[in-house]
Length: 354
Image (cartoon, rainbow, N blue to C red; front, side, top):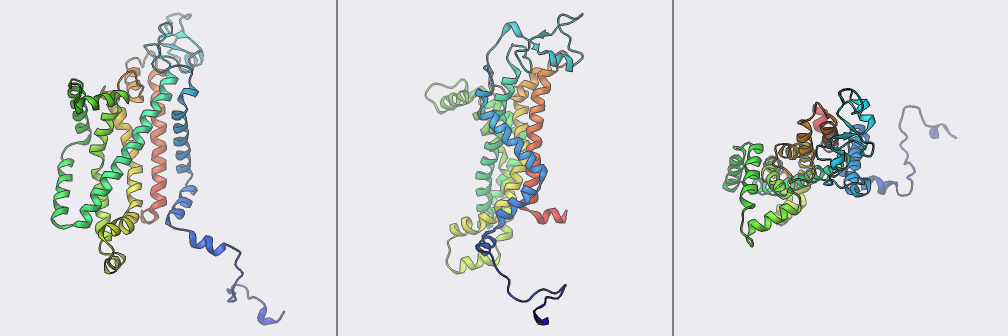
């Protein structure tokens, strides 16, 4: 080999390098969403959160196969019973065969039973369906209503933008949780006494068929979209004067095409991040409504009403409140971890600036 062909250490070889078959295609196919996915996968906390969420989803789907009892079935011979391992775990719980004992030992129920003789494990498993329903329906409603509302307001601008944002300000004047409580109380009191054949009567039947979830979805949907609308509007205002938007206008692209082809894909990242971080709030809202008696209809199990019922006997039977609270804690933390990971993956500049 001549000296001119010998590579010099520390100096990049100017000669063209061999390219493996398909390598250029793979490099060109990488887009912002694939880059975001790779950043998300490298975040261990978010992956743990995602795995926990998937586990809860599978538990909710296969609840009948995982449990041997009905969540509404009562066993009056096993009221406030607990397995032996729970009595050993909580020293204040004393079995009936001990002095001053009061707990019925029943190893047929893994986590014990409540004050009506219903299996706690079964009710916790079925309660995951309620929390996960809110976790998915709430963000979908907010994304659908808030994103469209904010895009139209920011893109049209002028008087229309001013009127639409003033409507959002009016909604902001009411505390969201208080507004949901008032709406739930109104729905439950008014619709339950509606005449057959009316719309209110049909809605009440649908709500009863869903165990009381319809009015919760309506309440959360009405109050959850304002933040998303403001965020979408702000993103559209920053994009509206960009060069690629002006270029699309110059070649005759319609406003509808610009919104859905150019504006929407560029604002979805921040909007998705915002909604993923808001999911624990939706879950806690449903749990709070069930805790105060405005949530799901009995005997449909919700972690909120299970905590409420267990809190009344927490000194004597701590398992009745601790285990549903632990399930609620795990699910909310899992969504928090996933939301933080999505924020870092979809908006890495914000992470570097922070």
